Image (cartoon, rainbow, N blue to C red; front, side, top):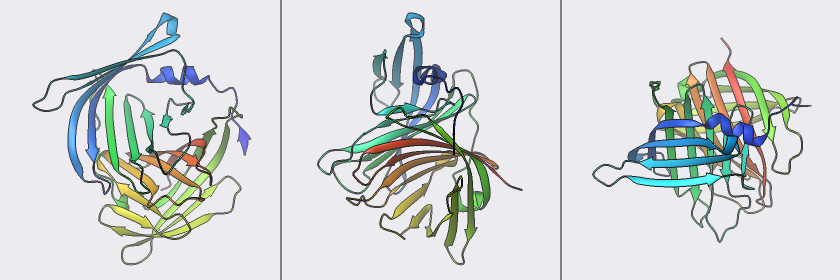
Length: 280
């Protein structure tokens, strides 16, 4: 495990998201069914020499008036962190069973972004999902199929960058993810971070859902439109660490994942960006 060299500032990483992003907000059920797709335009405009950022969010719901929200930032809140690419997450810094809990996770690749919001409304199970797919204004979107298990099978190797809300130095390490079929609808996943021992889990595929029920904190993975995936606790268990993740299969051999990790006390601990490539 090594420290990343000469990382850019959090504000500079935010500015990697500047521009006008055109796409849609797709409302999904907790099991991944598409409920509504709302065209959108999000403009991120630097002001005052780049020291302020104005965000204008326009939504165009069918047969309804335009919805517009304008926000201005000159500093970042405690619940947000950015990675070197401009990938980011914002959300709850502490999980409490008596308040709404959730986070947005955003990935960026070239002229495209993919964002996912996961919300737990005062309950241990997921309440709603919003998938946001965008491209820079004037560029064409890349059409990607719904994610499938077969697309993920194989060995993926890459690099992980972890940043921390307490401002300790970022860390980078090698990653290896092996996903293999295990008879019937079963799959076996083996994950290695750096020099740590491999972590193996076994899951079952049920339609577009993967369920990993081993361990003290069972996990659900939803395979979503546009090559996206959402990973979250099947039911939040008090006293157990957990994570929220978005995945994005950019091409058949390139994938990004962004992981927001919480400790056993429900406190936000870190944000990890994994960029991985599939071995031939």
